[in-house]
Length: 194
Figure 1 (cartoon, rainbow, N blue to C red):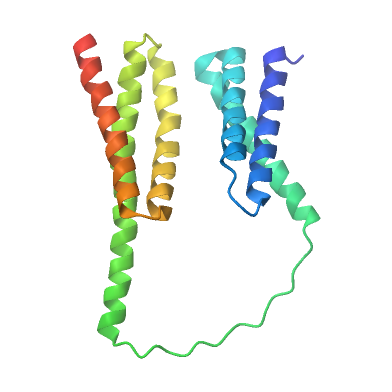
Figure 2 (figure 1 turned 60 degrees about the horizontal axis):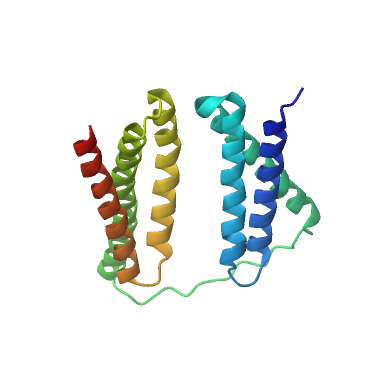
């Protein structure tokens, strides 16, 4: 028999995926829909935490959210008509020198590497702050490790995506500095409390 919190978690996960799908289908970005969708998914995680504890509940909730997302993608794939492939275009070779082409390729690789490493370093700082902040709040050690384990890849992916797609260098640097500054404050503050 399903517990009421499980039903709430399933409903919130399905609603969150549905709202995010609607936001994805819109022609212009709707921050209201995006925020509502992610808020519903976070609410689903909170409901699942009530079912099996903070260590196992969110893991079950993530599985439910992933299954809901896969079901939504499968339903969208079934409704979408098959498109015929276009004939491949022939490209005219660029007149750039091999050295210039090699330099452009190395610059792109360096940019991707910098984005990945910056996202990882800032995510490590944020997850360290999350871990120490939760420890200062008295969260049980295993639950704290589980939360940090789930937070790290999400933070890393989110930051790397933002860094890669942000319009301005100032916006990228501001976000990274803000996350590192908040993390440093939490880390230094938890050292004084402990």
